Image 1 (cartoon, rainbow, N blue to C red):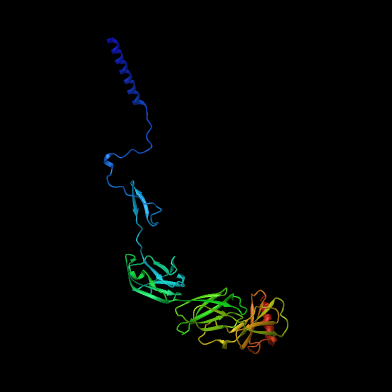
Image 2: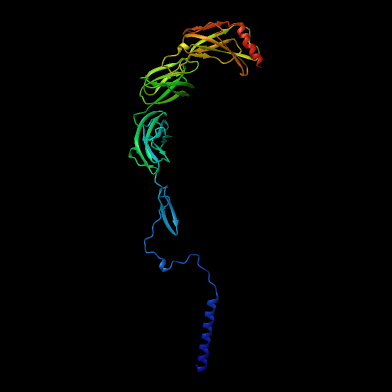
Length: 366
């Protein structure tokens, strides 16, 4: 190859290199979709902290990220007066009430119902926003009967740290009675009033309601005196009742009373009330029955079921059919001496003038 040819070839190669370098400076390239890695000075040589799975971590914990790092936030510490009450399995948490009393001023107190837990023998309570001071916690049955008191509980910074509150034991202090009540035919008694008190008379009468043939009673004594009462039935009284029991109610004494006189005018009715205050028992419950009555009616023949044999006074109450006005007539006849026998029928004749006065009064009220 001649000298001239070599020089031409070198020049051509130099021109090609110049064109390639110029093209690489002017053509744009796509930016990567990931952020550029840290510079060597930003790289930490500490081991990376492991972020726990949200499924494995307790629900109370919160995992947050700040500035590209992960941080675990612990739940706030419990505040207030917290505690657990252990009770027998047949006792409901709702049977018990917790009272927090300021020992510096006994008239200052708070109360909360015991809350149920998954454990049938344990309930829990919480009093929040408690000022610094010394307190007592009382566990009550049925709002007024104190079972346990724990005093000298120190609250500082809104929190009480007293190990005695970890489990307050009231087992054996509450007795549960499950009663079933039936009528004279053996059917569950729809509704009745039930009164009870300790058999030793150490406490006043309390009441419960029989519904659909059942009643549940909680007491601090293992033995009760029980009275059942319902309109049209004889009262039933049992002493020394222990545990669950069945009761059978008996219908009252059937009495028929016929009222002589003129038929009632249209738009008026009459009801009858028989009352025997002497049936009241000293020391008995206030619900003890002493009377019987009927609904207002137009017929002159009344059927009543009295609670017991006694002398009953008679009251006739005349009223408008819509019940807007009434005019009672007391002592219209001699008292009725009711015996504990079947088939008793009484015929009474109230004072005609007294009846006319009541009916005239009602006529003016229309």
